[in-house]
Length: 266
Image 1 (tube, helix red, strand yellow):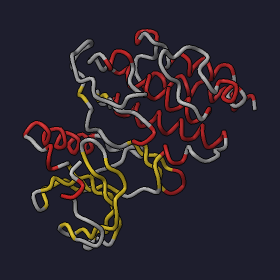
Image 2: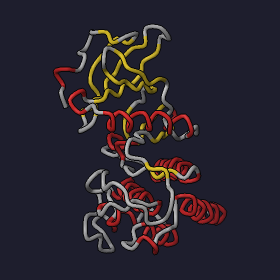
Image 3: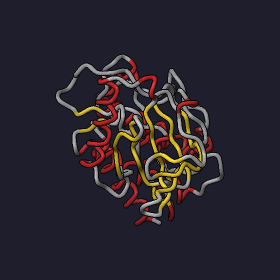
């Protein structure tokens, strides 16, 4: 990332006054800024100028367009997307922290289940719109007040056309399903990545290849989840995509049924 080309703290970028840097990724820098017109703080995702090309900008435009189609309480909306001083800028609401940051601190089982429910709702909503996220990971879930979880970064997302379509192997190492790593992302790939995130929420550890069961941290997660919920989670982590839930909608439905029965039994 060409950090030196990015605006610095106390500089202005259009109507935004930069306050600091949140994160630097391979494609973009995320800055904290103050919207001087609306009087609110925002997160600005700015494409790396060194990487900007027609194809690259189309990816960012697609992300902005998908966000418009993805209106949901657990999906981070895009407030604005435009060129400012030759930089392509996407403005979004500013959250408190990422799920990855929150997972570094102790978390009650009740809160972990609530985050699981919200993460499922976000990915299921994308799948119901025929959108594969392709980069489900803790860093892409932003936490707002009252522990509201919102999924962001649809930059790698793909509109699903047909089963077995060829696509990019892009994503984040550690959360890639085997078939996605081979360039064949599908709904089940998001299910796999989401299951890794959920396992990490409860166990504090991220399972690694070859994903043998039980993964590290199983003793900890077994003390928090009932057997039926453990079986539900294990299905999402099956190596063969056809053995997993067909999409996050089915995974969410199974979770809701199991959770409802457990609540009834106390």
